[in-house]
Image (cartoon, rainbow, N blue to C red; front, side, top):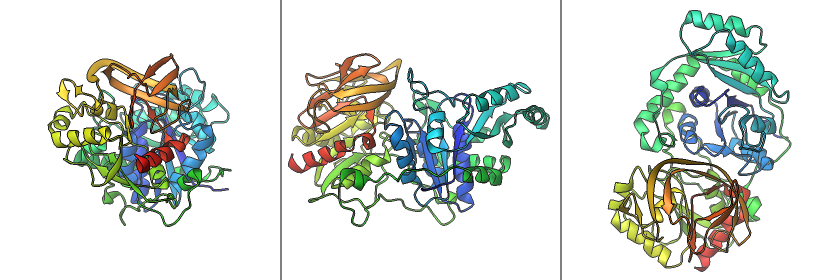
Length: 485
C-alpha cells in the first residue's frame, strides 16, 4: 500500500492565503532538494500554474465531483509517483463542497480520501483571541478530518503574534508558522481569478520566489515535513492512462507543456525532473493531435494529453497568438479553456491561423473545444472576427456563470455517443448567442435542465469543462475519429 508524505493546505474561507502558503511550501521544500508533487482541490486551472513554477512538476487537480471520489487516490498517486512529499492546496473554505451535495468535492472530503493531515491557514489580520474559537471549531467539526496545525497569515506585529499564540495554546492545535503582511507575494487578479503564470512569466517567477522565502522564514518546515510523514498509507493503485484504455505499455513518451509556462530552475538546484506518463502507446499508427496553448489558452488537465497519447496520438502544442499555421500533418484539434477575451484583438489579427482552423473543421476532422475554445470557433468575439466555424457570436458580460454541471451527450459526436453522462464545470463571464446549435453538445440535467453547445461534422464545442480521466473512452473515441476522418 503506497505511502507518500502529504499535507492538505486549507483555510476557513477563500482569501485567507492558501495559494501563498501552498505555493511557498512547494518552493521551500523544492529548494531543500525534495521532489515535490503539487496538487489542487477542485477544477481550478490557474493555481496549478504557480504550483508548477514552484515545484518543477506539472500541477494536477483532485476533483471528487468531476472524477468521482474513487479516482482521487489513484490520480494523486499518479501525480506523486517518485516524489518525497506532496502538497495539496484546498479550495474555498475547508468544508465548502459542491452546492447541495454536502461534503462532496470539499477540501475536507479530499483530505479524508487521501488520509492526509490538514494545515489550516488563518487570516489573523482582524482578530486576536477569537482565533482560538475559530480554529477549535474547524478542528472539531468533523472528527475524521485531522487538523494537524495552523499557519497564521497577515500577522501585524510581534505583539499581535504573541496574543494569537497565547490564545491558541488552549485550542490544542500547534502553530506551525506565522507570516507577516508582504506585498511582494501578492498576485494580480481579474474577472476569473488570478492572472495565469503564462501571462506574467517574469513577475510570476519573482512572486513565487518571494512566497518560498516568506514561508521558509516564517514556518517550521521540519515540523511540517514531520506532519506530512504521519499520513496513512492509501489502499489503492496509481492511475495509469495506458491501463484504463487497455493499451500496451512500451517506453513512455513525453507530454508537452500546453498552457503553463515551463518550470524555473531556480526552485530546483538540479533543475526540474521531467515527468512522463506511465508507458503510453496506443495500437496502430500514431495520429497528430494539435493542442492549443500559450497565454490565451492556459486551461488543460495534464491527464488529457496523457490519455490522448495512450490512445495512440502524437500530441503537438501550438500557440494561436504566435503560430500562423497548425502543426504539419494534424488530424485533430483540441482547444481548451483560457482567456481569449483578453487576447481577442491578437487572435483576430492572426488571420492565417483562423483560416487554417476553419479549413480543418470543414474537412470533418475532429475538433474538441471547451469554453475558450468555443469562443475562438465562433463567428466573432466582442465584435472581432474569430474562426467562423460556428454560426454564433460571443461577447463579454458582467454576469458570472459558475458551478458544477451534470451533463449527458445529446447525440453522437467525435467525443461521445449519445447518452454518455459526464460531470462538468462551467466558469465564464461571456455569452454565446445562440447558446446551442441544431445538434447540441450536452443536455444539462442539473442544476437546471437545458441544452448547450454545438456538434457539427467533427466539431464538439461547449462551455463545459470535463475531466477525461472520469471517462477515458472520450480520448479513445477522439483518436479513432482522427484516424478515420
